[in-house]
Image (cartoon, rainbow, N blue to C red; front, top):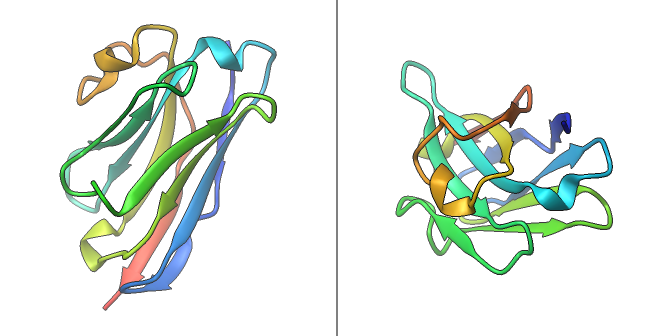
Length: 126
């Protein structure tokens, strides 16, 4: 099983950009579909974006579509979340997570997620 470590969070002004990274340990990273999720203060965790094992399929929450891009580099065991045009409502702890199931199973559904990272805080000031 992989272990996941997120990085790249921080404080940014509204309209700015950040790129989050999620580094995975182990040799089996390419077997995992990956996802980004977030949890804002006082709110439930929500789906942000997912990417399939071979990078062919990506899915986004409506709230981030057109602003965020998920990608992966299997050679580096890393998944990325490029976040542009950030808004104050994007403020949250961002988590990456992994599953060996099909990527479609983790769109807004947490039961198939097998591994979670510890999270990285993104704060967008107005």
